[in-house]
Length: 313
Image (tube, rainbow, N blue to C red):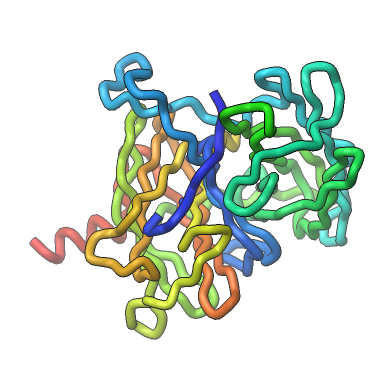
């Protein structure tokens, strides 16, 4: 099964990513924890095959996460830079190899790029969505500054030209220095970034598909000036805490009562298990990409959302 393809029009994405399917972001600006502006992505997007339901999953939603393997379906992520230094600009190089060990040089473009690269710390407090450049010999290169030492996961989301569906492959990256992991931020239905307030309505459901609707405000007013980024009005990447599995996220064509440019962007997401997940929503306004981050638990509604509902009753 292959991940990450089409997270798209926010009103339609992770894209953590959930999925193995199509999330994408962009030049990421700082989030409440840590995000780098320079290329963002959203979580995955491949559509499940009709009738291909997982055991116990009547909806037929694809619950298989992506990015947990370095090799899949004959393709391998060959990370040539296994370690970098903390808080210093580092150059990452990698090659995607086919079953014969040859570098892949022909890709199917998804969301305006041949390949999307996600970097995330194991504690999910640092996130980068980057778009590397590829040389003629198939080597991909990008630069990133990772602020804290520790373990990171590199997730490459791409579709070889010879294949009908995309893949998300993952490898470990070590960042040297004295490591003191941060706790996962507490679940919340509200996130603030660069003067914008983003609220989340919805919850993840273990083993099935559920809807997630994000609403963007600035200065207390709905943001209706969201701009297309990588062919969409927003992107979502979803990652599972613990193993950083990249989950399936599918965009909605329209959010309820919203114009194509906001303030709402909606997705359908599939969580493969109970547990904590980190959602990274990328949206673009005034030529800048912003990333709002949320912690959610599959099967549980964020505290702020519960309070809001009780207040309406």
